[in-house]
Image 1: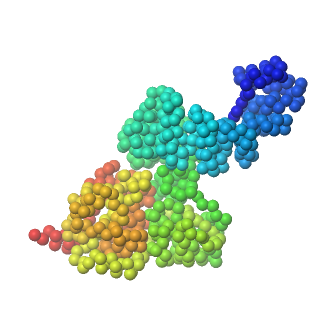
Image 2 (image 1 turned 120 degrees about the vertical axis):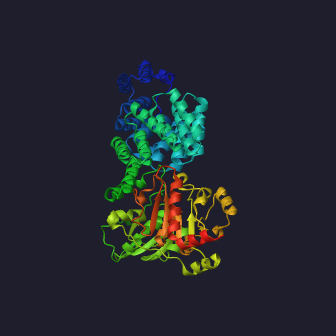
Image 3 (image 1 turned 30 degrees about the vertical axis):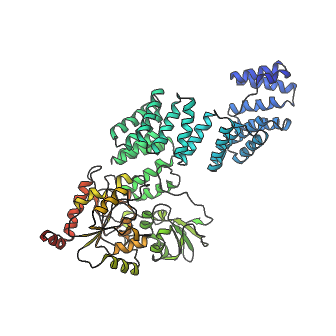
Length: 607
């Protein structure tokens, strides 16, 4: 909020108004309020006194009174840009956001370089979820006042939320260029560096923040996050504990401690940490979401699916797209669908869509006409899914529909429990013509064929843990089997490995979408995959599938099981300890030998 005019401007109205301004500047608000009222008794039309009396009301948490007083000032002096700025702040405090925005616009119309108005206007736009406009307002504030450090910090924070990490870093560094002693800027700089993967620099930023402010609980918590990402788990826990010792209500420390404990599979302790975060901040979506994932992991589907709906508000490491608004009502499983149309759509990754499209058949069996929206790479594969009345590619114009539901909300709508998972031997089919094409490319089959998938999308937050290097896996692949890569995209090191090992067929250039991969999978006797979309594809095709999992595997694979209630044809291989892929490779190797004993016998007897 803009506050006071220069005291010299008051001299023409005598010592009384000057005394009021002096008290206001000293922070003696009761005395200032009394003196402004004395001025107004003598000069009822004096706009500055009405304005500053309104500022006092705002500063004493009386925004409604402030609005009335400042509007009186504007009535006497419509050109008072500062009054419009303060009116906007008071209206903002009352949550009258459109009116606040209008007041700031009036202030800027009167004074285009009014930095505070641009800055506060940005806050309103952010709350109205007009983030691009908010960012532009913060930038106008900075352009009007190049040393406006608070605007730089706020712009940096918004850029960070929007995942513009380089821009966020630049904002924080602009502050530090002027204020190298600003601990908050060092800590925020660490956050941006962490997001950019520059972990050692991030640690140095947090250490500098803590050198300047040793009791900075949030910086301790943020440092713990980097230590966690560096697999320094004991040090990370110590950082979270230091944060909580300083501030027991530090929500980020409770939450991130829960994340780490979950990774370490100390699930009861993780649950307590999430609950502690929620107790302090009941609207903390990330804690609700992570708690739901933990509940799903343990098979508590009744509570897990309910909590999973918090995903729409979760923005930390989530691959959920923005929630879409439709005129049609969300179907929650309670309304009759007989004779009605419903839009079902995926809002997460390819694997999620492949896993949960099984519910389409159940919805159709309720008498609904199902419109299924899918991303382009899944179009041809899912066109033949049983129960689909109309398939639409994401981004195309949608036909009319009566209800709508995202695919991953269907388990909640159907009240799915472990015992009632709609488990099918096979619910997807490949194109017979494409299967024939692949069989021709593969040639005469003389040995068993096994498809291999060893890494997923590198943009997935957990990819560095779930993916493996082909070179590490090769020594565990038994001879006597024809191996076929199912990888569409190859990391450079894996491409070199494949080039050096021509015994593994590499048809990547022919895999254009999931219908091609599905047809290739159907030519295999068995598929071995890490936890990625191809694992779901192979399971949905009913193909015998070996799935290699990290120690802290995704929630859908539950705990300790070697089978999956979602995919009857799947066998799960889990790291016994974090990072131990060799044990997984050995288990897969042993079972491949058992699955194809004749091929193993031939390979052993070959010279």
